[in-house]
Length: 554
RNA sequence: GGAUCUGUGGCUUAGCCAGGAUAUAGCGCCGGGCUUCUAACCCGGAUGCCGAGGGUUCGAAUCCCUCCAGGUCCGCCA
Image (cartoon, rainbow, N blue to C red; front, side):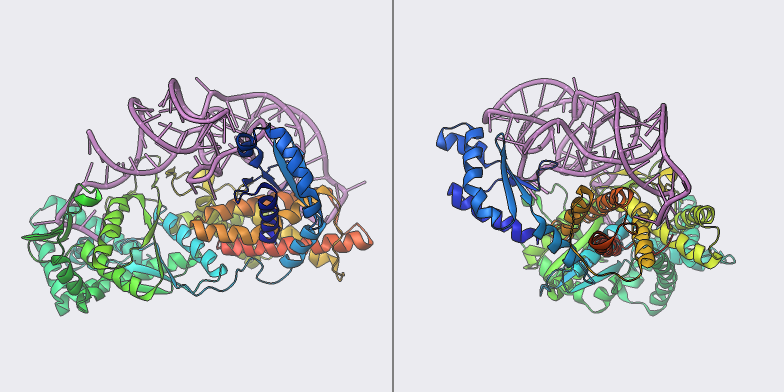
């Protein structure tokens, strides 16, 4: 809908100016679209922009009015306002189930996200990764791409050697009702303290790393036990957040099936290779000061080697490979992107996000200084339950619990996704527990209001007579939804969708306040109900693409 | 020291990559609105040298340069 009109205007401008540059821009309050082409033509035509705009508007008017687009020059700007057929078409399209879905694509896409080390529970920093990744994945699915979402389990690194050592030497028992990943973190923290107190343990850790790399059966079982325990807990947390993965890939597999050894063999042959005890790559030609280490002098591989193998495998299976990574991985990510093409392999695109810290400093699993995702979900859910109980005391407890759960997960996801990924943030309990405007509950509430109206309305006939400003502005915002999905996917910026959904809720709430639906009559009532249905459906689709439940009542 | 991201009213934040019309919204503050479709709501008001300085341009929050402040990274960890 939007594109059809956009292209009609672009073509009309091209005809009138003789240039493909339409200089189309958002017009804000002035109109639906504007062109600043008069500024550019001022030089060529040696005329004042205001006069050029006026003349062009005259030329464009007859062409575009037949397409139901109104043209007006305001100073040097040429403004375009979309007519009623656009508004009606938008509402009609938005009634369809799955509104916003784009045509099916054939490019296979792989998104890797979260991939936190299995040495403890997810904390509020990790879930920024999960929520950006999961929202992006949902948008890709909606945009019609065949997609696989992967979690890469670092199951053979030093930190796993440390935890597994802790499990076999420290005799720490699991507490009653202790979640597996929290138990693993407790052992990991204790093992690190032991390691600090007695540096001789370091040799034992290194022995374990050598053994796991050789595939020593006992060590494989020991590592696997710890990793599976922890990943089980992490998966529970992800499920609570509506985050899903299609596949969990184990780093160790690339060693055991010799894929990594093959990659190392080819890396050695590169002119960038430096094989002097350690195997590393000199990437100075690409602007990297530090060498990229692949294999230690004791012959064991470092993370980079396994990661290269994993990415070669992904490039083999997918056309587009996207990794969601924290800012701390910027350097290693850039080295990976520089190295893969040397092997003739498609490098991944990396979506980076900046750090989440606590007011008292950065989070560390090893130091035990973190707010776990589980703790956050529990607190926010408890707070949401209190809120629902105050607002809806008549509802049975089960129902209030369900609503609280959806509100809490929505609030957490929205609070994280609404901030641009390139901004570092400081976790704030007060903000996390706020359910007012610019929050998921605000958007969920708009959806619940729409649902409530439709439930009370009974039968009605679809109608498309819109007259008030509030109706038209709401319909025009609805019309933008498919375009927003496309922007999210092409720019890999899911936070654009969070802004869109909030603005949609704003416009619905204003419409709700000024234009009575159930109390209106005849054609107006039918049209408003149709608009409410379109808004409800669009809110639902937008919320679900953000991984937030669209509640019928709250 | 080098690399990189960020700096927008008291606080949080959109816009920046693809430069244009009075810079977006929320929290907080001041004032108003529930006998009316769910007030997790709506309406109005005050609050901005868009970090500083230069440059490019008819036009800069947006592009370029310098500087200042903060985050992150610079390991034979992951």
